[in-house]
Length: 286
Image (cartoon, rainbow, N blue to C red):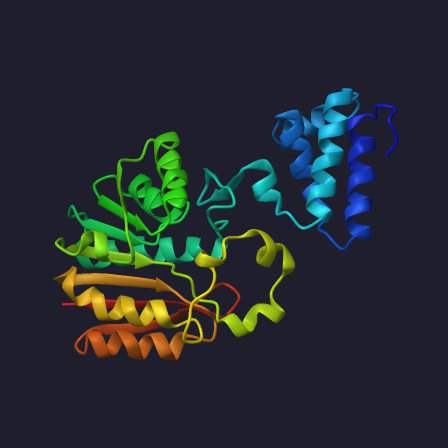
C-alpha cells in the first residue's frame, strides 16, 4: 500500500489480500479497520468511499503488519466479544473462547434446574479477564459472585471489565481456592490452565507467542490444577452444589475420575462442545 491515501474499500481490499498471502484470516482486516475508524460493521459499510487520513492509514498498516507477525487481533484492538458483551483483553489474560460460553450456558441451565430462582453464591476460580464471573452476574443478578486469580495483572483486567459492565463481583488474589478457604459456595466454576507442555509443538504460534503461558499450561499432562482443585473443592462447597470445569478435549475421563474421587455420591457428567469434543465436566452434589 503506497503513501497516497486510499479510500476505505481500497484499504480493505489491500489488507485482506495481504493477510491471505501471509496465511492469516482475511476477516481480520475488517475488524482492524473498524477499530481504526472507531465504527461498527454498518459504519464501515457506510464509509466505504471515504478516504482514510494519513494517520489512519499508517495506524491500519501497522496493525496489519503486527497481526501478520503473530499478534492476535483481540490484543491489537483490546477487546473480545463474550456472551454478547465486550470485554477488555490484553496480554495478561487469555482471550475468551466461544467454548467457554457453553460452560456459562450449562451453568445457568443447571442452576435453574437445581435451585430454581434462589439467591446463590458462586465462585469463579482462575477468572482471567473475568468473562465467566461478570457474565454470570449480568445474566443472573441475584448471584453473589466471587472470582479469584493468581495474577495481579489479570485481576486488574477483570476488575476493569466488571466496572465497565457494571457487574458487582468480589475479586480476590491467590492460588486456586486459597483466597476463599473459609467460605462455602453453591456453585464453583473454573477454566484453569490445562494444556500439557508436550503439546507445544502442535499449538498455533499466535497463541503460543502472545497469550500468557501461566494461563495455558499445566504440569502432569495438563491435569495438575484439576487434581489440586478436586482435592480442595470439598472444603468450599455446600452439601448441595454444582461444580463446572472446562477441560481439554482429551481430559474428560481423567477429570471425571478426579471429581468422582472427591465426590463419590456426586452426579458427574462429561459434556461435549458444539464441535463434538469433550469440553466440560459437571458435578452435581446433593
